[in-house]
Length: 77
Image (cartoon, rainbow, N blue to C red; front, side, top):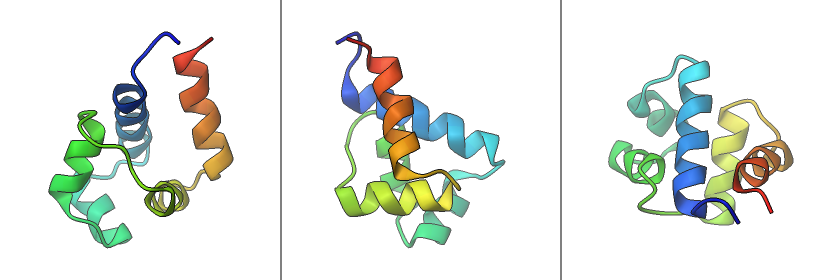
């Protein structure tokens, strides 16, 4: 495994959020989460629950499977 799952998830979440031109606050508002929580996810401090993972994926207009694939590709074998 090339990378740390928390860090890779956070980087991927931030990339997707920025591609959608969303602020952390907007993503938090749209998903019913706290902005500080989004920040902690993006900084690799926390990992989301499965339910949160799905909420984030759907809000970012990506299938959860595709989000998982993006993360898996960055982690590598």
